[in-house]
Image (cartoon, rainbow, N blue to C red; front, side, top):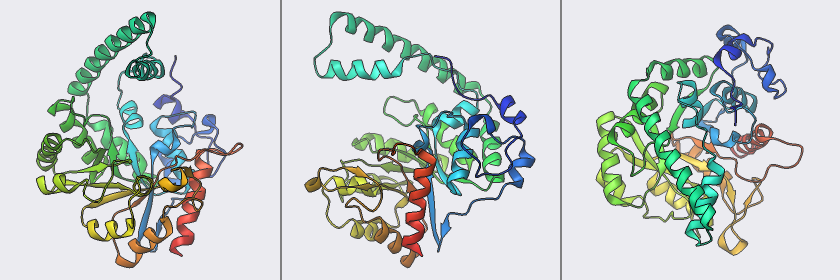
Amino acid sequence: MKSKNFTRRKFLGAAALTSAGMALDPSSLFGAPAIVKSLKKPNSLINGVQIGVITYSFRSMPDQSAEATLKYVLDAGISAIELMGGPAETFAGKPESQIDRKTLYALRRAKKQGDLTADQAKELTDLQAQMVSYNKEVAEWRSKMSMDHFTKLRKMYNDAGVSIYAFKPGVFGKDNSDADINWGMQAAKLLGASHVTVEHPSDDAHTLRLGKLAKKNKVFMAYHGHEQQTPTLWDTALAQSAYNAMNLDLGHYVAAGNADPLSLIREKSAHIKSMHLKDRQSPQHQKGNLPWGTGDTPIAEALQLMRDNQYKFPGTIELEYQIPEGSNAVEEVKKCLSYCEKALG
């Protein structure tokens, strides 16, 4: 399928937008740097607490380019972000994939469940071969591309009033080479990020490896968690390296059945580099992912704890509840930010 991403040339030629709050029409993307500088800059630093957003929150929006992503962030009123790898790598010229990933992932699930037909098994083998070939192409690209692209991307975001505090490219897995990992960490530094994020691998050897590479690159490796989070999940990694850190997910922590998440924040505050915010239910209430203020996650109390104790790590909005009909991701992120403003007011 042909990419919907806007080219940089189209972006620079689109000078129609004069306000960051205009309608979310991809054809109205603001253009030249001078126009970006003239826009009213956002400020989501609220009573000492930096509220950010992970750009994954905008995954449902039609254009996933770095330029469009910046517009979504600005329209939502956010001034600091955790940037996913996709927009940044596309901006830097990453080869486009023609692989049907949706089908690939569905076939992998079917294989795991033992439900593959002979034809599906053949299709899966073909798609996996395509993926191996594409990954080699991308690795070759990384080895030769100019890292200056990330400096330019940082400037574009910073000029618009948005800082990048974390970077999440898909290069920190056990199957990635040291070259891949170093590349991701160096890109993060050029983007201005203090840390990179990755799902906790539940593998002590890998967290040791990542911690050593993080120390070498002088950037923190912050481990994200889903429902595997416990009060002690990060302890081994934190003991392995001063550059291993936490990307706590408050909502998933609650959904995992852990009691008293505020105590964990107090205990681990020195190790938390950023904290994902979403409102999930406890296991007793089916673990739903709900609009903020309707679940069991103490978001307001956590934000107030950050304010009152002057914790410096940001709270990162991660939009994962179902977007209501007639709304969109930007409007829902705005609602989440408003919730934070009321909690911190």
